Image (cartoon, rainbow, N blue to C red; front, side):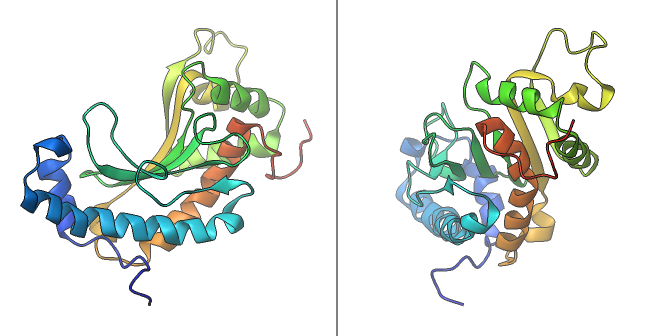
Length: 223
């Protein structure tokens, strides 16, 4: 395996995030910055590069820029360093597209998709696709049954009887986020994490496609 490829997050990554994950980077001393570069930034960059190479096989027009400030970014609001990876639709661009993300936290490695538009445009496109598209409905039911979490601001009329029970959890007005958490106990030091994440991204791509208004490739579009 090339030294530039992902070799797994070392056991000290989780403890580093526990100790420093909520501390602004400007408050770090030199030893903390050096530790971050070794246990967090270097493996995160390698993971991003390896996943970027697989994106064409995961879904069309999903792109990455494996550099800090682009695909590598930090938690908002606290000046934290990069601990997340994000991918977006090439046509919509990074600022307008929903994101597929990998979020490395002390609790685990979170994978998912999020509608970053506060107006809920991606959530709206997903809602419009779900009602008539039975294969997509079956797919999202499978996601929910296998541990994917759906969160956001529910529509005020989502419980008025007009929405089928199997779709009610997906009737999000804004801040839509669909995610799955992988346990550190299973994936610390595992180069195979990149394969697991790639497989999970394939699971979430149909939801991402609906959020970004792309052609749906889950079954047919029969009502």
